[in-house]
Image (cartoon, rainbow, N blue to C red; front, side):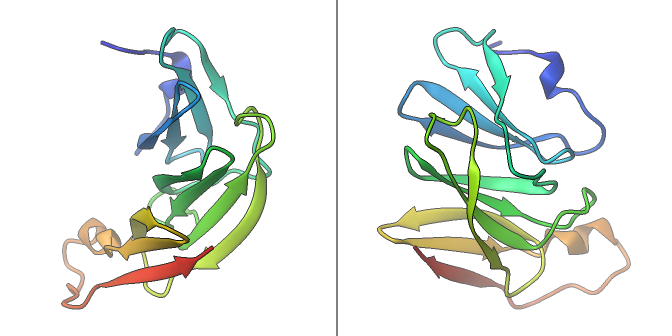
Length: 148
């Protein structure tokens, strides 16, 4: 075991999305509440909430673009978020963050992303179709490129 906390608790889909920060902590997204947690790698009992400008319910994939810039891939899913990718900026090592940009997804249910240079590639996996076992299944998927 590495870390446990009451902050990890919640209903439905919960912890989802994790990224390492070079300052020595992990960032963990909370899908259901849209929060973001900082877990100290040297002392995993030190866990703090990031002060956010809004809750990002449906937070799925996280991508650290730079020590002061983070992407959150957010989907509607059961958490009722938005199909978008948001960019956060911070001036205090993610004690708090500000919304720096928001990018609507071309297709529903974006799940994760990867970055290369000044571009992030967002996967629109359409996982929402799995929540409806009788619903139609897609045959086309895409990677959406976002330039920063």
